[in-house]
Length: 411
Image: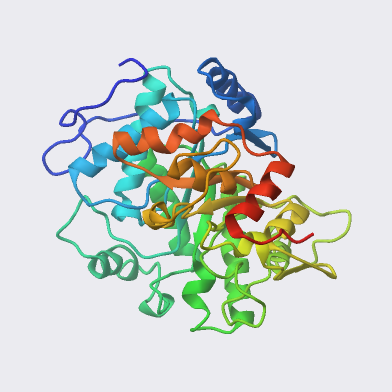
């Protein structure tokens, strides 16, 4: 197919929803050389060089594609697959985000089919694309709709001795390493990948803080990070992180608060072999390099709330991330479409509703990209318009904050 081709359905799936083609595993991962090649190809399609951020040598698009919403249907399977294909082939996106529980694994499978097509058609090779997923929440497999979540978990994990019912939090989350390992292996199979660029632990503190003490949670997190470090050594993942909802946005007095600096310390100990100090000459680089959190005009805490400490200095989570060498991806930049009804003034060349909402987020310090969910072709085109604009300069950003939030930016 040519680069703008759209799959029409029916060929890649048989009647029960299983893949009928035996696609080979796609080997490799995002590299500095590969992502730079993507930038050069995007420039030839008119994308401004400033559209891409550089993090740890990787050139990543300042708009990423999310795959959260949708029905468990062949129609939405195909819509997600085509949206990934179109987003990447446009030159606007080389960051794709998902989770094993999104659409009960079917989003991951749609991504896998899109990646196979992109590689087969010579549109983009594996080393040009940054793929992230999440694990922790319990899920079933949407290709078996007759098996609900709890039955699937019992058959696959509890009966097999991987975990017990007590390992599931009141928020339906599991942090036991044996379960997380199974999830990573399943995500690799779903997307037909040899390596995932980034694996997040998914809303872990939000799901567990009512069930365990903070000290217990940090011990559980350490064991999870030790697993991720082992999977890094085995080449199954490159980085890991925390996908969160509230813990990095609320103030320290909240029961849901988590210190980013304390999480980095856990990762340092995990990389050092667990339990010991990470200081000194034997310090090993850890893989905890990313967080994901909601950030938009309604949820502006990441930019405005000085709720984190690094050393003795109090700062916002975006500032803390920069100081600690952590990249930030922003979830819910359109607030699942609710902000599209807001009266947002035009600013700095952004005039259509989507661009006005995305431009401020993608231009924020420490933010690599907002992650935008999209399936319908018209939404893909609308959401990617902002990629034609360079992100705001620091001065333009400060003026935009004053305009959009009607308050001066601190500092």
